[in-house]
Image (cartoon, rainbow, N blue to C red):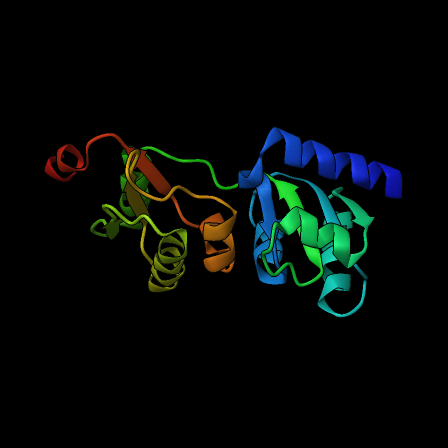
Length: 178
């Protein structure tokens, strides 16, 4: 089990798939509650909320592996993992039409946040966390010169990115006109 854990960590590092690493208790719990695809969860113990994470993961058929904190530190690349790291997929980007469809289904006017030139992933994560709490239907970000959804955004959003529709567009001005 420990050898397999080492091999998987090396594959993760060598393939540079940082965007598929979810670190921290709340982000992992939120990912488990949503439809996020999670392949494996690595934990340092099964006490407290980590035990709840293990139980929830096992009930969903997700592999749970025990590793020491040193391995989790390496996987988290300096981030605060709080004893848990999940390997999976972040929320996929959607179209602007998908976001507008949410408001149509609710029978309300669109409530959308458009972010332009937000380069710091911590800021984008904070915006997503606040937007999800405020009931925003979706967030639009540009494809270039802006932060993308990655592990830092996921961690800063405390997992809210798992519940928020995010569209990545080429031309913000054209979307605003639309």
